[in-house]
Length: 81
Image (tube, rainbow, N blue to C red):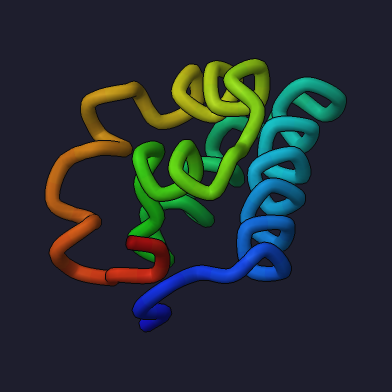
């Protein structure tokens, strides 16, 4: 959807990753995190490119699995390039 992310968009995705990670860290809701990630076709690579913290990415990957976050979702939804 976004051809070339700008700084504001990167900040959004960093905050998005932080929020998802905190949902699991603070409330132990891995299924909720997995549903949001998979439901919107978001990839770990997209969040990483936006500058999300590795600490948050690790927490998200615990919910979905690192391979699941980096498979075909990039082809389904191109949110960050």
